[in-house]
Amino acid sequence: MGAKKIVMFGCCGVLNQSAVQDKIIVPVSAVRDEGTSYHYMPASEEIHAETSSVNILKNSLKKCGMSYVTGKTWTTDAVYRETQSVIEERREQGCLAVEMECSAALAVTQFRKIPCIQFLYGADHLDADRWEQRDLAEYGIRNFKKYMQLAFECALAL
Image (cartoon, rainbow, N blue to C red; front, side, top):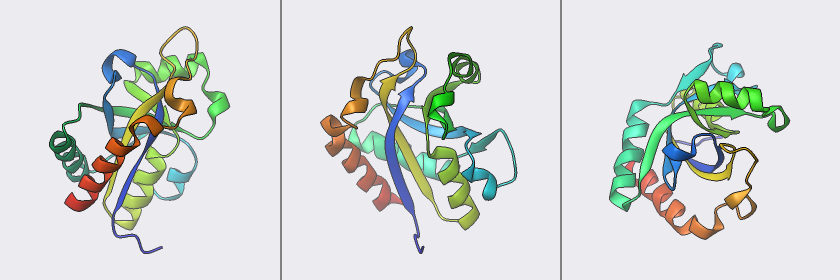
């Protein structure tokens, strides 16, 4: 629809609390467990973010004074299939989080050859004996100013 560059962010479920604790998550790759990405890129288990976009995001995070962690995320559009056994499997693959957009957005933007920066903030917690809703109910309202500041920094740097 004419977009020349994309910056997107949103909440995710945390799969590795000790690594993510109070940090912005910089997805460097995503496990493709959704349907959209397969319409834009050949089948593969994972899709990788463009290194240049990841570097812009990391520089913007440093400029904004925000701590972060880089790693893999798990994209699924089937929330009721986030079973304990699949969560364990994704943790073993090194996934820090679960969300619903990353791999699809990477596939579309790589197909269209436009830069895309994505970052995530932890909302609900799936790295415990019981699911913890945490910030999911507020959708990041508490920290929306810092997320917007980071998004604008990234957009200006793209």
